[in-house]
Amino acid sequence: MFFDQLKTRRSIRKFKDQAVEQEKIDAILRCALMAPSSRSRRPWEFIAVTDHELLSQLALCREHGSAFLAGAPLAIVVVANPDLCDVWIEDSSIAAILIQLAAHDLGLGSCWIQVRERFQTEQKKSEDYMKDILSIPGQYAVECVIAIGYPDEVKKPHEESELPYEKLHFNQF
Image (cartoon, rainbow, N blue to C red):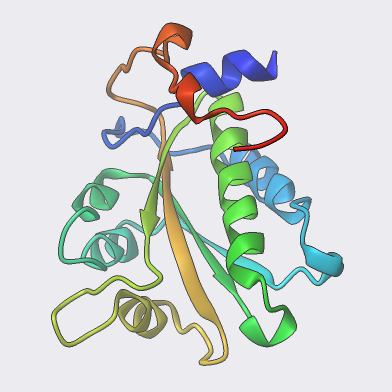
């Protein structure tokens, strides 16, 4: 059941030293290609990274919060062409969460690493750093990178009793 998938999907930052099978990578990428987008513009593109050296370099994309990427066997970088659609951020975000849900459905863990509007150093944007490493053309923007692999940590599912129900409103705020 989809609700159970949402309850058990948690951000995983520790991965086993085990490669993700190509069939699973392909399945995740097919799911990403099915992501809805405004007016079916599909401004997003995806870069699957399995090379350990590249993953180690990508782990340095932010000042804080990205180091764990070096231990992931797979990363999927979500980029988009802003010239194709004014809501490329939303479209890319939808695709990114589908990547995470597909990974979870296949028994993998994942964690979103925000790239857009973050910095690698005080002087260099994370996006520019990633563009240099992955040869991403200038017209593309980098939304995020999703670390993926077999979980090497266990996190308890979300408890329904702890959900912030006060944030729900009906008919008016």
